[in-house]
Length: 529
Image 1 (cartoon, one colour):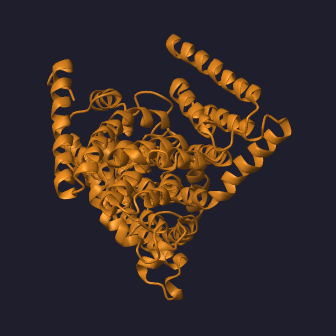
Image 2 (cartoon, helix red, strand yellow):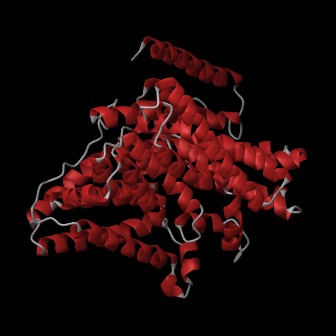
Image 3 (cartoon, one colour):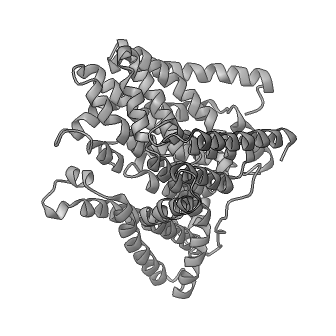
């Protein structure tokens, strides 16, 4: 650790101890106050300073348990273990199973030689780094059903392609992350649309969701940003270092420990179909599982079934069937034996251990903020800002960004804010739609930036990238789009017409990138990325 980081760490430790001491001395009830957001701020701050995510998250969880228990030792341990870790594991067990099964599937297709075969095919058909990145983006857009599924599937499929064209793992993870949640948030048939629809009057949820899409500036402009910066063939901020190093030196990681990866196996029997078919089967069965769990066989429509589904049950349900079918298919094709398939189970599990650990700690931290009633604090703060009606969409966007960043959850954020927005703008339907979109966009933005977000963690796992490298490299890009989106919400507060404001946002995004390319070229020379 550098001297400056050691100084920052020392200051952070003193600040944390001081905060906890002040809370203890004051003796006031901390529930439902700004103290509810202190634990995630501690965790995120330490992670950015130390570049060590496990201890940072644990200290954040511990501080939340201390505050929530009123500084009781036994209460702290009960809160930490029961409300934190055990609740996190039980609440996300389905996603853990899904992660492990996907890890096993990746190990299987690697063992079969399918990944290597796909890499050889891609080298012939995808001729450039630009083509590799755009192909990753397109696949991310096509898998719009669920963000977890998107992150891990796109990463598994596209890693051989981007690796062969020397695209850094940080850039791969950014494209995955910046596509997954944004595309799910603007796709009417997705687990996200279903979650959002739950907060509206019965039967009107999907209609509200579709009407909000044109004002969802962060999600839409993130997609524009990816296409534009890829076609312009440049990068800025920390991402530039990773991309230059990957292109010139073939080092896809640059810094930090390398993620556990399942090595590709050379198997002359492996074919591209051995990769494509398991993925198609996985997608098809998972879609069926989502609507089945949602109650489509109980007389519900396809859309209503999506609105009533539970992805934590459906995704492991579908992926387990896909795994069994894949093992049977590869065994019948005689590209792997049953024994080799069984050897892939622990390999796939090991590859997903870092993601599972981070997800457990991140979920525990969210539980701490819930224990301290961050929802009540935010509701009180927003209800007192009604006098700034035309500026409220922009304010709501910032509030949603902060909550989502601090708690690491988009769903929890819009779950808090949508009922408040509907109540505040009940007599202003046009402004209500803009404000609701601002809430959804801010939720995605904060989630995208947050190192404790499950989607960010999944993107690191999908791209097999060091998690904090992924966070630090994508942060300048996410903030750039967020600033433009904030400006658009200020404008939309006075001109609530998406057909006018959205094109302006697109022009601003592309124009900003042209300016950044000129600045980068002036600083580093036109010959560099």
